[in-house]
Amino acid sequence: MEYINGIEHEEILKIEELRKHIGETVKIHGFVYKIRKMKGFAFIILRTSRRLVQCIYSEEFSEFTLSELMEESCINVIGTIVSDTRSKVGYEIQMKQIEILSTPNEESPVVINNKSMEMSLDTLLNSRPITLRNEKERAIFKIQAGICKGFRSFLEENQFTEIHTPKIVATGAEGGANIFPIEYFKKEAYLAQSPQFYKQMMVGVFERVYEIAPVFRAEKHDTSRHLNEYTSVDFEMGFIESYVDIMKMETRMIYSTLELLKEEYRYELELLKVNIPSITEIPTIKFMEAKQLIAKEYRRDIQDYYDFEPEEEKLLSECIKKITGSDFVFVTHYPSEKRPFYAMDDKNNKNTTLSFDLLFRGLEITTGGQRIHNYKEQMMKLKSRSMNAELFESYLMMHKHGMPPHGGLGLGLERFTARLLELENVRYATLFPRDINRVTP
Image (cartoon, rainbow, N blue to C red):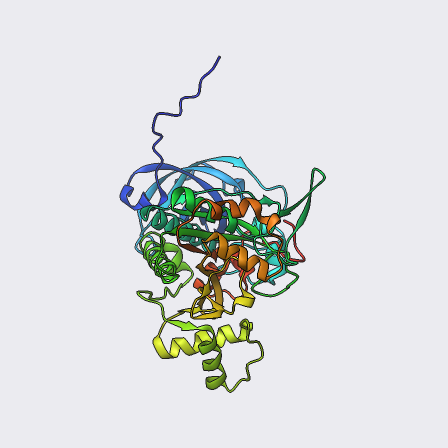
């Protein structure tokens, strides 16, 4: 019988710390990203887990032949770190020995070691397992990982408990036609549009909860802003005084996350030339006031009195930027008719809700607001919409047995990433997009 001891600490030399070891012989591993041959020597760019490292092959000190190396081979390298003032990182590695762990069987269908991927979006996505190896492409998702880290860190620090809710459900949180039915042992079931019902239930357990997980929308929109599966960052909190508490919490969450990115992801931010917005406070405007502002400033007639057109979101953001300098704007008091049955109506105007959207650089990234917590009020709203309360029996259980005033939001991770990096299509900020045309790779 054998045993695996995973307790002892395995010291791994971090690429970021190589400059501290100038003059030393080290062992590192990575992919051969690029080979630039010169007379008698060559530059070998090694792609490690986060950075590119410049290595030097020379007939003088390398104990192998250059012909042994192929681009995208996986190798171990033993070499000496030497100072180089011409290098961006201040050093390079003189390669002495290599161990080839694997070599590619075919030539890459796309060139991935250029500074940017000059190709169509379809080509980029069709070869996604390969194109993500490009330094800038993968930097997008390193930053996205940092965004999740920032959100999690903030929420944990503010007493939110992480939960994991079902993605196979009996009813949709929002209803309508944009829900995916699935075969489920001779029962009706669907892919979850949102963790809404469950995160509300869990407010009655933990008071403050959050989840970062996929959600599914069967929307037949083939646009630069729509996906049929995306990652939703949800939080819900109890004992609030008003929906404003939710907006304040999100403002602080985004601020904290952007500060973390600046501190821990500077390499990727500089690589992609990211313009980090300033966010100490976010302006707010009511829905109808926003509609009127757009109509006045841009001489547009109001066509839709219940929601924004995509062009209106862009124009409103442009207008708010001019007036306040903010890249963000909260739009509040959406019409009740357009919001789900669990949204709390404004007592001063029953036609509007205590809800909001957050727009970021011309795109809605968040929907949130205060929920109905009183059982009788929730039943009245269900009846006013001719909805069958029996279908929501397990959801209404929490209302029957006491809930505090509460509310929350859902933020689209891919949309947030796309607007932060100013990418024109949300698919660029999605690892493996799922839309009406794409289920592979």
